[in-house]
Image (cartoon, rainbow, N blue to C red; front, side, top):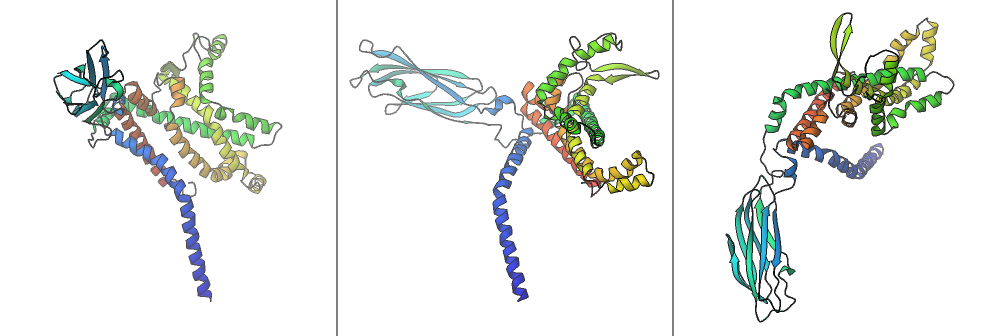
Length: 426
């Protein structure tokens, strides 16, 4: 009896698993298609010398017009066909078109350098190969016959064209020129260095400020709920609004910050915080160039995204048993010792997850930098480089190649980070 019960339970569990998979499968397919298809498309484009103009495949543009229409008083007229290759790079092959001629009209003359003839009241033209940007025209001289009436219109039916063309986007021709171009560029490694610098300090700063804020707000004081809600303001505000506010505040001519610094005699002349690449700083007699604009963008990144770290860390702090702090305080542990030996072991897991997620998100960040500096003054990152390559100079293949480099870099970083992190941390 026991064996039969176990068998029935196993069959039931198998059926439940099949039902669960069948219910989840559509969602999994949808999610994977949204994520994987664009990723595969990006890889595909990165191996092709393609520009924005190549997204529209070569096309034959054919227009028909009638000159001096036939009428009871006019026995002759002309039909003109203008054709053009829309592509500036690729030719059209085996081009041909046909057009129906009304029964009441007779073609007396065909002016064309191509093979054009009339077959059963139908114009058939074989244009053959048309080079890029090439154009031409075909002119028919027509007259009336005994079947003609006022309703006969040569343009009653549109011409039908056939041709073969090379679509670089869908072809099986691949090249490594895009990757050679971006890696051989002298600016690439500097852009990569700026991206890592911006990402690391932006992520670390947001985590540290979030951790510090969570520790303070965790204490009970009057108005704590209001302060907690106020701290979320940078994160929930529209990025275009806060970025514009920062640009106005730090404007070298009308900004409040420069005016205050000048009145306090901190500086002698206005500073272009978001437009000055370096500023000379002397520390203990040692002078060096400080990356001003990049630092300002990093400070903005920290200010805007520390609330996310603050929320997660605060939730984890509130789940820590308070008994261990009371016991440590009785044993004479200082607040710093309590934080280092008690809080950190409990928080290390959420901090590691936040660091990984924030590193990936910050490395992919584009809108903040573009709104603040446009990628100028030493703030050009790889994501800005993707935009400039793909849209500013219309080199879509090179832009996709840079995006592939970003993906591979983040994938390698994530694998290494997870491998060398403590199992209980991730």
